[in-house]
Length: 340
Ligand code: NAD
Ligand code: UDP
Ligand code: UDP
Image 1 (cartoon, protein in one colour):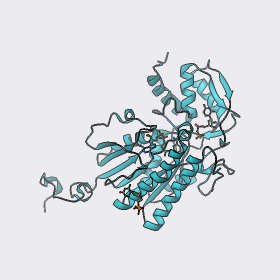
Image 2: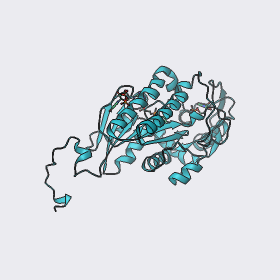
Image 3: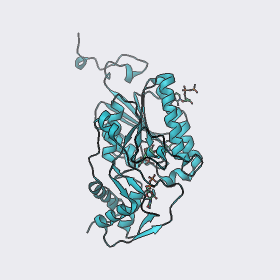
């Protein structure tokens, strides 16, 4: 018998060359919807490190950008497609990381009907694709499925406290339907599913003006503007650094548990505490001012990550005080504000 290494350079004809070829048996073709965005582009970087992975990104560039992927454009194992997930997509892949959806409140509220279409029709299309090609699919759901939670911290078993008709509903109810679709395709069609419930994540490449609290505070501190704490300022969030997030998502995809599994950092801060930390680390001369809040803002949020620890052997490594300076460095470069 000839070994693979000595095989002829011409692969035998095959209807699905990558998936069926003897050459590439262990290769993995991975689709990342929303891969031009913040978390998606970091996930691309990590997946591209493995030479057996071929990565395809499908993105409509609503909140993402080609710039986030510039180091991979032209790479033989990488492909970027301008595509809106609310339209069908016919390709051949082994795994799907389905991230496509704006994550910042100002962007998901900008066109709420589009947001809910992205969550519902977009997820349906990704599931139809997974079913046709037999791919495993991971959905990036959100801690917003817990709404304004009445249980603290939030375990996966909590069903949530969500307003179905509010201004955030296109996002949180949209993600709840997306989770339902995932489980119905799993039960009805045997699709291999994975659901991550992501808690607030931060790091380099966040849109500078995307309106989320960490990016706002860092940009404000660097521009010498007052930090805008939305009232009452006692509301809490728990912030996960993006490299920890990507590690958690990949472990979930490779593991055996469908989820949902919370992925987030349990370190909990009030927005006033976050502002004080940014001020201390980046610009001690800056002011902190209280401003009006938006409706339905959750008052507290902190993941219970017992399940992630047990099932994935995962817990976050980067503390807020260590992650903020890494993000500061990236924002300084992009805003052209050198450190003195
Ligand atoms: P992001 O806005 O940076 O990335 C989302 C990407 O999806 C962008 O590149 C955008 O252009 C693309 N997109 C949006 N609508 C699309 C459509 N209809 N078709 C194709 N592409 C589309 O956000 P992110 O922070 O990277 O979030 C990624 C995922 O993680 C989202 O599903 C989000 O709901 C989830 N999530 C994020 C956080 C967080 O704190 N960052 C928290 C919870 C959940
Ligand atoms: N779909 C897709 N790519 C595929 C297969 C299906 O985008 O490779 C879409 C398809 O257009 C449909 C959705 O996924 O809108 C759900 O597909 P499914 O086969 O589950 O349902 P059906 O087509 O029977 O409604
Ligand atoms: N927030 C704030 N100042 C800002 C932006 C947001 O105090 O400039 C608060 C907001 O009221 C919320 C928290 O920060 O309580 C997190 O908001 P973000 O939009 O980052 O994410 P969310 O968790 O609400 O999706």
